[in-house]
Length: 86
Image (cartoon, rainbow, N blue to C red; front, top):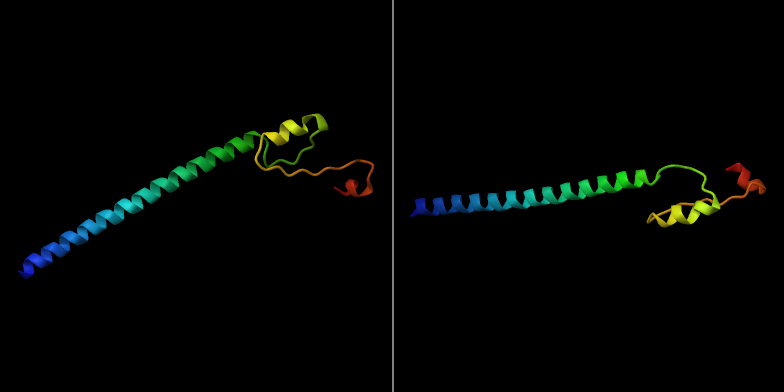
């Protein structure tokens, strides 16, 4: 009887290990998909000109800004003393 209990415990441990491995494997696959999507998005953003500091004239402004989720813009005028600092 003790031998049967030991065998049942061993079988339960193996099932738990298989479940744990499957859980870890699914988490790993999910994270890999997330990382791949993030890399694709990063490359697309670099292609759009993200990460660059450049001057955009007023005619191009809407086209530049509407193509991205997040935009940082600094408006200036050459005749203003504070703007010459930038």
